Amino acid sequence: MIRLYSVLLIFVFTGLASAQEINWISMESALAKQKKVQKKIMIDMYTVWCGPCRMLDKNTFSNKKLAAYVNANYYAVKFNAEGNAVVNFKDQELSNPNYDPAKAKRRNSQHQLAQYFGIRSYPTILFLGANSEFLAPIPGYKTPAQLELFLRLFGEDLYKTLSSQEAFNDYKKSFVPTFTP
Image (tube, rainbow, N blue to C red; front, side, top):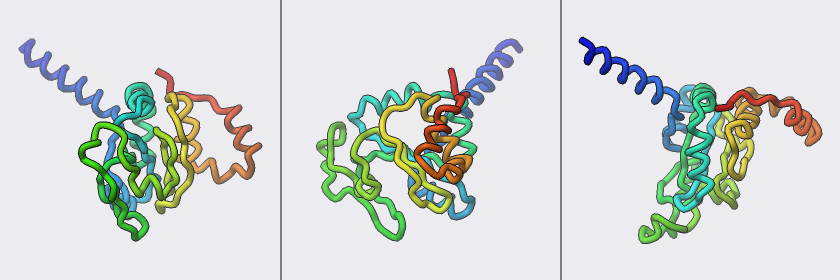
């Protein structure tokens, strides 16, 4: 009987832990889901060789509060900006025609989706609106608290009320993060 309770406890705690991870889906899946239930899209544009990209996974995306917020408010996409996936976006088929499989673990050519959004550095987190319209790129590594500012800005449509850089600066100064460890 004690073993049964131990197994049940392990199952429950494992289930709770996995429930706090970001539900990453493909770009194609996010676009399809968005047609049924409008939700914004957050894209983690990364590369396999990028150290700050791995830090973002380890230190930021693993934050339970951040993961819960992302899952509730966004379709989350993890996209290899130098990979060979084919994506249909805005009636265009985007791929990586110069992809070299021999370079799969190091620098490769840039995917057309990354080019479409003008991505120049990694990681870059992209925010798309509920109709897949481009809202903003957020380049560089961000802590959970730093990323929370942008997740809430776009997730709660606060960006619509900010009419100037000064208004954004005021928002940023007054912002109190809650996604702390």
